[in-house]
Length: 373
Ligand SMILES: Cc1cc2nc3c(=O)[nH]c(=O)nc-3n(C[C@H](O)[C@H](O)[C@H](O)COP(=O)(O)OP(=O)(O)OC[C@H]3O[C@@H](n4cnc5c(N)ncnc54)[C@H](O)[C@@H]3O)c2cc1C
Image (cartoon, rainbow, N blue to C red; front, side, top):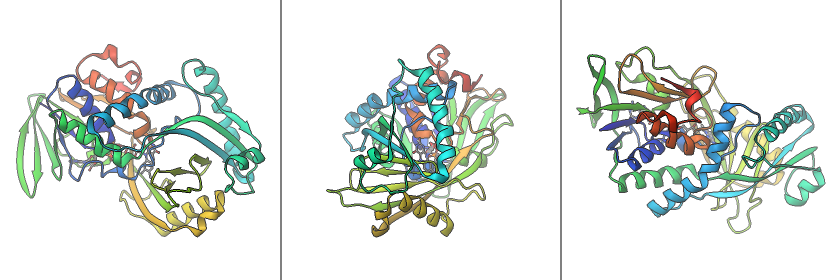
């Protein structure tokens, strides 16, 4: 049996692909499915601008997402609110420098990836942007339209993925904490878990750590498993009228994003806070999100805020994905540092890391530069 610790988007996507390869999989989750960082995610699937192996991996993931989403929605028969629409990027006078820096990177990405990925964009005047989005602030000085952007409801997707995994024979133990790994010689042998204050030991051939920031507290891990640092993210949700939403588009400005759901919610994210590793919400976080949202769309100040949520993005070193297996303990794998892009990367990560774990390195091209062997 293969044990995956953590039923967030990473662990669930991986479990799905291992099950498709005929493996027996058991997910251990200390909370409920998708209640870690994945719960707080806006879940828009847009690669950052620029070139390089990580951008290529992310664009490839975007390509795979529609079929991944379709497969999970068909298998689970559950809603996931997957949307393919457009994004409007806007700049104010004081964010213009950052906007233009990103634009230079975007041009480089468009040049490198054109013909392979859908990297199109269109430069708009502020007037054209207002025609598309009449509720936008009058103070916008530049705008870009990205015609092909995908997003989904990450909570619904994790629930659907959990359902799909179980429907195909996967086991998910919720409210069960992974306490310590056990090895025999230098080989993984079992995992000690705790549920309702009762300990149990599960035998297994492999353990995969998809436990985000929680990995740091699992005992007996070898030294070569990287330690994560916490980057807290807070998002707030406005409730729009479901039948007449203020926007149906993603709207992004250099300091954040406005992301509409089909039920009329508008998610506004997200902060980046590196002070303490707790998913708490500080007043300053809410104020800065309100400021950025209402500055972008002033009419939002008349709408109620119906939710405030915090999550811990786990990051290692430079924040690049950290994947691989331990050289000290055979059968122990890790998939860490999903950072702020765990949903974006999930489609390619799940598919290719499953192949890596099964020893089929040749089928793991895109993740290969981020895998330690
Ligand atoms: C505000 C915010 C907005 C974001 N927006 C986006 C976005 O738009 N697009 C995007 O791609 N990404 C976004 N992200 C990032 C995304 O949420 C993460 O990259 C992703 O959720 C990481 O997934 P994960 O499965 O690695 O971690 P998690 O979702 O944190 O899952 C890890 C799981 O492991 C469990 N666990 C930990 N320790 C143990 C243990 N000892 N025993 C058992 N279980 C354990 C936890 O309970 C948790 O459920 C955002 C994040 C935040 C905070």
